[in-house]
Amino acid sequence: DVKVTQSSRYLVKRTGEKVFLECVQDMDHENMFWYRQDPGLGLRLIYFSYDVKMKEKGDIPEGYSVSREKKERFSLILESASTNQTSMYLCASSQQGAAYGYTFGSGTRLTVV
Amino acid sequence: GENVEQHPSTLSVQEGDSAVIKCTYSDSASNYFPWYKQELGKRPQLIIDIRSNVGEKKDQRIAVTLNKTAKHFSLHITETQPEDSAVYFCAASIGGYSTLTFGKGTMLLVSP
Image (tube, rainbow over all chains, first blue to last red; front, side):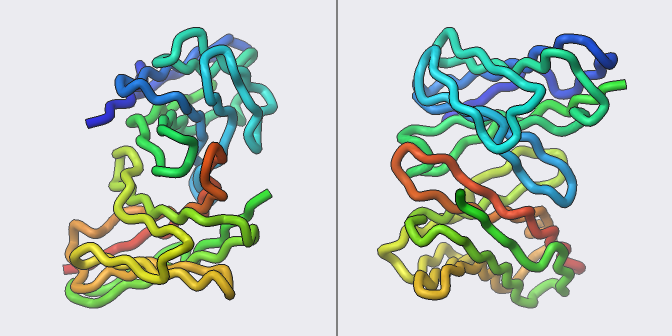
């Protein structure tokens, strides 16, 4: 069974802090994704990566960056956290892009105060 | 880019009734359409998917239909049970190394 593990279930950070959200998958998937989930807005793509050291912007990349130094790990970075980044963040991985669907992590609920 | 519209946003049914959730997509090149179920506090999980070369797919009480001409696809749940209560998301992609575009979700509540 594919496992996608997000390091923190809940995080509370202060405005202006640099925040790291970590995601690790254990099935040698090439593709990894970061989404944020907000009520009434569904799942919106922030960044994705098809290979190590490769990254592509999604639909809402502003205020975020990512890092993929190893195949199994994909980190989302909030350079300077703001209150409008309070949200549920979901990491996902897949083989062959979207062709076989995604496996999601359990999510990190981030609150910026 | 792709745009996926999903309706209704909430759906309440009685146990044993059927439930239908509908999605439309904008990109005629889309060819892969998965559905995810997210129970409260849990991760979204793939429950069924369909590709553009198939018009219908069924798995026990759930089925998905696809109308490529009209660019819409639907999730059908028969004989609903309280454990079907969840948020359901539809999605679409053009396959290959593309990404999934999700609908905004439907909260299904099944009352005993």
